[in-house]
Length: 250
Image (cartoon, rainbow, N blue to C red; front, top):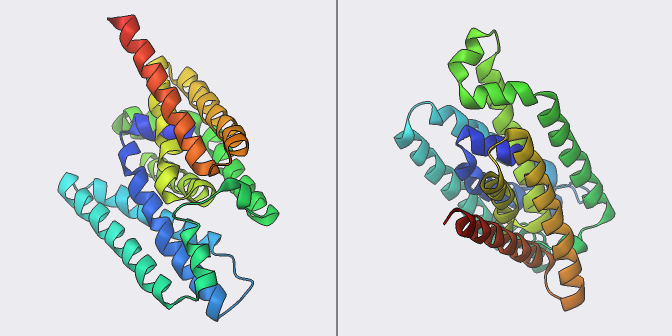
């Protein structure tokens, strides 16, 4: 659902940049796990990196497109540099953990990983539901929202924060390279189906869940990576919806 909110906010395009921040967080997290504490979970650090990037992007976006573009480029460069440098110092068996955030496989995650992903995902979904009206006001007219007494900047920051957490979860489950498809395509496809916001949220949720379930079934039957299968199904669904609408309007 938060992807639809970001689409309405006009900020869905920053999702790939936020997802790249997960690489830097994962690399530092695995570094800590390797040399400081073997029980350290890199995932919280991934969330921190995604949150920091999202909040900085939100702040810089208010300074204009040039500042925003510069911030996106700098954040990408920093994350990829951290990933590359730290990875070179890790043992071979630990590099696999870092690379798991680049291209992951949902079926290979441990029960603890799945539990943490479920808790974080549920928290993001609950926040979206609770502040739904406030988010919509902020997306369409921030000045009017402030005139109505809403703390528009606070809710705008919350939108970016929830989005960052969602991106972190997707990066852990599918990997950075393929997570973007499941974050962007359902929202984009839902907008092709309807312009009603509540229906967009419902359609986006159905498309995301359908892509996930169909992708898992496809990966099991064809013995292919789960993340790739989910991405493939979501792309096929989007293409089918796009072609159907094009034929319907022509």
